[in-house]
Image 1: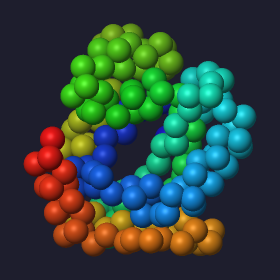
Image 2: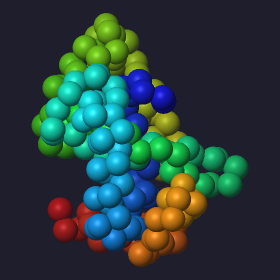
Image 3: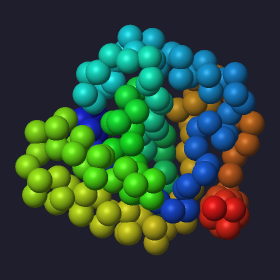
Image 4: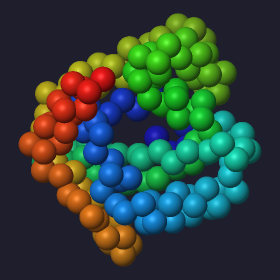
Length: 166
């Protein structure tokens, strides 16, 4: 994905367990601050300089080993982050706004944006059939201590609990 804006739907079995939930808050804040300062508070996708920047996790999915591996943390403006998670944006009635942002940033026609979204949801549906293992070695190899590691089964249980709360 490099620095290109794209729809990056997280498989359902991976919801609610992310870097923030696996590290203590001071390490998470340190990580985010590092990412933000590395890019001088500039969105890595649309190049918008803003203090309203958010950290986004980029993952690699290995279908053979069924492993979701953290490969990078990037700084995104709120709108690029919303667009990246367009499924959640749709649930929050921000889907149309997110699609328009994708078109603007990627210089997509409406049809190209819809095709990109369609393909992203197809990948998401395929990934939803797998119980992913979580690999956060990018963190541990850089001396970030994990306060919690979740098994695939624990992650599914957390998703089910959180969805019942909604």
